[in-house]
Image (cartoon, rainbow over all chains, first blue to last red; front, side):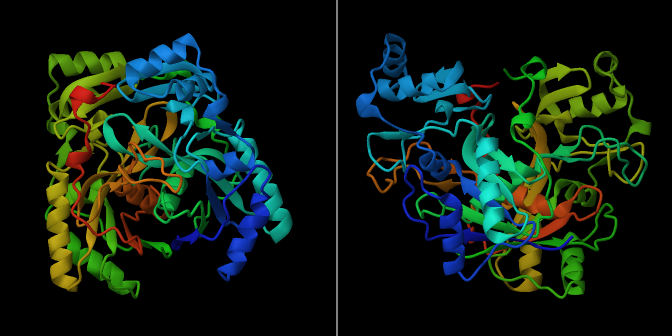
Length: 249
Length: 249
């Protein structure tokens, strides 16, 4: 297994509704003297994908429900922001002061249904998650492949908190053309002991690796991962645990 | 921000109690034509650190308690394995068929107190987590620095599952000489909106990135991460959430 390299792809403009992401990525790569190679993985932050898909809402036009107002007052959030969070969720998982953890319509469990108020392009704007992130990744992948002529993977990343540990890590919310999980189940270790329950969520590890070159305020919304040898057809949607077997709902 | 490269460091021998890990890593690097550079981060799997520290137990000598026997029968685990898991834990967090999630004496919440039965060096052997992983990382770092003459970081990684998502990811269980969390709190985005609650657990992202070149059965227990610019003095122990504010205990 050889080295993996992660390149920050800077120089993308502010992304607006309808922005041709694949073209902008190709332009940015060209300015860096780079081009896509077979099996490269393009990791792109959720925020620019959402902006390009018009998943942006102005709080000026949001009229919070009584429930959103009550929750907002209780936890110290703008009730209009809470209204949007609720509209993107199927249920509230946990609520505390300045914390609202929800299950999104996709099935992600994360803070604020992934509705983000920072780096949105305007102080009263919020950015929602893409409606179907795996499909967003597939579309971007198809366009990148058509332009470059090589087979690549695409991962859409977002920063999620996790129980028990402080801090967020980048995880995958959508993917195309990459392995989602590397499966060691049923294989044996050198001593003949069967590896049980060992599946590595490599698509999340790709997202985390990419974050190392991104940096929140530096506007590096894209990273290129080269050498990971993870071409495949995984989907993030299939990685979400069945609620029936999830011990932490 | 420039590229980050991750190199698999293969060629280490089977690690036994007392093995001089720093020397073995330096030897392996030399055979690969590499040497440590300032600000490199050496990511090493928990298993080889534990083996070098003698944290290996033969199940042949374990006499399970009545409680371990009862749990083992209920969840389908070897009661001797359960006995060791319990001895490393302060409490059971969740229990289900073939699943035992505990809080370790360090405060990690993970499967089986991190007591592992695969790749242990023998079919009846189990490997425990290091007693003080941050200190293990510090010791390894000091030795690597003394040998190489450059300041490096060390991360000890292990594969942990997580709620809500299938699959495990590599996280840090010990660290020395690296930033644990990159803190964006109190900074403002370009629109003047203050970034709230945004801390990236970069030490875990380093561990995840390293896993991309490791591969469970290929015996690549060490990876070198170059170019991440994350020199610092973070500790993993400080990243564990205060139980009083943890919403998922």
